[in-house]
Length: 547
Picture 1 (spheres, rainbow, N blue to C red):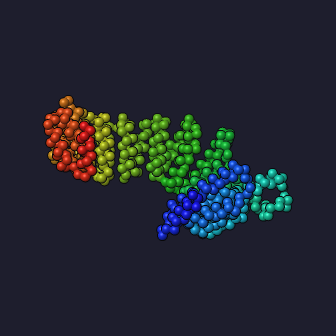
Picture 2 (tube, helix red, strand yellow):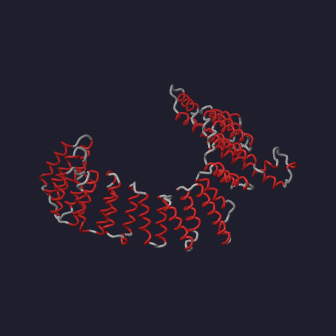
Picture 3 (cartoon, one colour):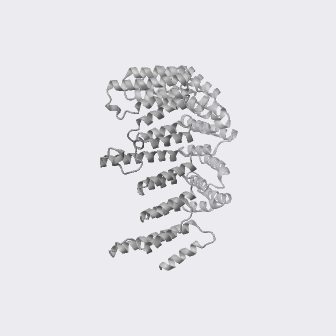
């Protein structure tokens, strides 16, 4: 049986076009076979090292792999599982030859060399070769940087355990004071920023790695200082440099009150200095975010800090440097402190600055309606008029819907007049609002008035299918329904969708059976059979049989 199975798999691999699935099945068979052999050896009490037969099976599996990435990873995983260290090392080398630009593969190989194979030299060679081929890969630079810091940390702990105080007492080569001062990691960082010079976030990612290790403060400070030297006109440089003050704080809660205040004052001075050099909307955004998150939120009961924040909002708005998101935050803060009388003035500043997008007008009008007690109705109506004049026609539907909601809540007597105006606008606006109009009429007017309105709309405009569905629903909710009106509506909708909608033909038949003349059902049935096409016809016959 074993020979037959292997012969079968070999035949599969001899096809003209070999499939990956054939390799995977063969591999799975060999792995299962190896597992079964190990189980039998365990039962028989055989605990010797693997025989040449074992390695013959391993080699057999190795020969089945091609250049597919997943196959390489499976190959390496299997080799690790059986403890074949030499094979793993060779497998990584061959995989990297096939995929030289996959940074994740290089990192995986270096991690294995360092963690599992305990060979820092091989790990370094891997990372250096990877960077030569992928010098713009941020992940490779960071992983190489982290590798050297990990190695130094490991050696430092080793010396502590062995109580080694002088480098001359250590048998390991290259363990000088410069090594333990993380000079190698510093060289890697400097080479990294030469390769990727204009990325501030990339530089700060080295700070995050440095923070994981001891004795790295001088290097972190050097990175922070380099930001203002290399990027003096970038907002992010001043932002990160200001928050450098937090770098040595491990436990904020443990600080005394005056220490916290001193720290906040120092950070604020840095942000203000940044605004002198880069007075932009983004710089104000960084400053206000920091002040709200780190100063106001931790002590919301402190009114003096809230007053400072509100003054900063006002200053930024006056300079036209307040972003849209910070206007949202300003209003949120005013709501939290219940200063509702100030909100209309802030809203006015907001819409004067941001009046070209639908989202801005929707936000403005929604907040305005929330605090409508501070406005005259004429003012609100005028603001809607401004929105409709400021925006292109294709996006006005949302504004009309918002105005309708206001009328429904505050001006119910004028709702019909507004709806009649809307349904006579451009089709992009009128068509979606026809359903809202019909819904309102059905609730507030008689069925006779409702029929007159929907009949007029059907006759004078191209109504949607959804509108006709709504008309049918309204008619079926009457007590009793008028079958003549229902027939008109069903005939109209089926003239549009009758070729494909088996379900609607069944609904028509059910309506006729329930409220009309059962003798008409047969006529509808045969008409449906003539109209429906393809699979819809057979599906209709099945549904009808279930009635």
